[in-house]
Image 1 (cartoon, rainbow over the protein chains, first blue to last red):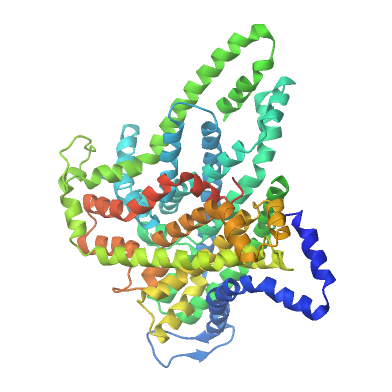
Image 2: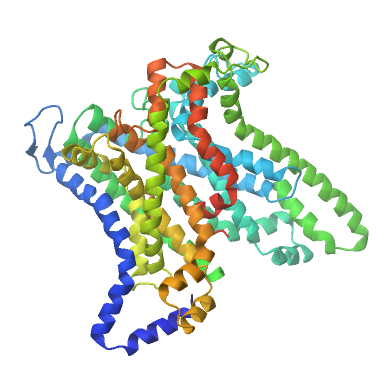
Length: 312
Length: 296
């Protein structure tokens, strides 16, 4: 890569200008189909969403559509349910990603050592990630967390838990348990790969110098794992924050809105309440908030990747 | 964590003084047995819900609804018969079509794009990459309303090609990132040598670059397929009967048949089986892809 770059630039600089411009387009051409497609399918809808958000429009009342300016936004900020679901989203995403990462790191440390049947254990551990989220949510709702026939209550019965109704007593936590189950394998795989890319001779040298194992972990392994952990957190958060399946299948956001997240709440407004304008305004608010968070997240990703390329 | 950190020293502590050596050896073996047990216990714990799903799918409903879970039972295929006789196949066909066609389309668009962002980089490579990944961060739910209304106005609701377009869009940014990192693995000397020989770009492409990135393409295709096959949000909102996919079948099956554990388990097993098998077989590709190629 680095060896190629100088040749390419010097060739381009040597050519006269019109040719250089043509050359630029030759270079850009392979990029354009994907770029144009992505702009049309992903950016256009957002612009339209902004436009809808300025209208009052109910899907069930034809002819009701009219321009209302920013009043939908005022409603969004006055809406205490929106605030509650926003908090739920943050708790759900943060909790799921952090807990999944902590367990993932622990499991990766175990799997990094050789033991009998390690390959099989790894296969068992990645399986939850492969299960269709809708199916996984249904399984957790029924066979695992059902108050009467669920395995979890059966296991906890000796501890006097009785017929604890997880989904109505701890709805947010139940959804999170399911998501942690699905996302821990992903975190584990990333961290495991990070561990395996750690240069072994440095560890050896450190322990020869008499460093304590815990110190080695804290001073050498953890800094090395940092970019893998960041990558996992960012990628996991992208998917978990958009989670709809688990909420929809397990609790329908209930009881009340105690386990509803923003995707589910906006979906409800648009497709069950048919309030296009209001749902669109919520969407715009979420997008703006996401952009703010994402700017920080992207900075992390870029650091991660430039680090990788230097290493390669 | 403690145990594993300790065993790091155990393994690398072999250079310590000779008298200490047998001790270290013994400790290391002890540790790896303990770790093995921990590994197996946690592995089985994580796998248990899946195992239980498969077991339950071979039960009768009466056997599935017991206060004390029944482990020993005479297996029955009747749940699977119900699943297969309730019109599963059109959904599978839709899912397969949307998954395969969208994945091919993604590869077709992402490969040249990734090339222009890696081996022959355009000027604003960083910005373009930033743009692609930022589209993944925008919440899907904010786009669903205009997409729904556009599809309705174009008479493309409940149309499998709409799903193909949407799945291409959701996977394309990830694919561009993955493919780019795989292109970056192509050794510069190899390309230079090909250029010196005056090989045309197409030949360089097929003979030099393609063999190096082929495993990467496989990894990308696998990840895209998993996300398409499992996608639910668009499917449930944009499709109805004609273009509905397997996740929609699963949900519809539950609401029409009622929430019966054994039947649900059988349906979920069938729905999830293709992806689980593919993921098991192609574990290495899975890891490479999921880390955006950051991991070799």
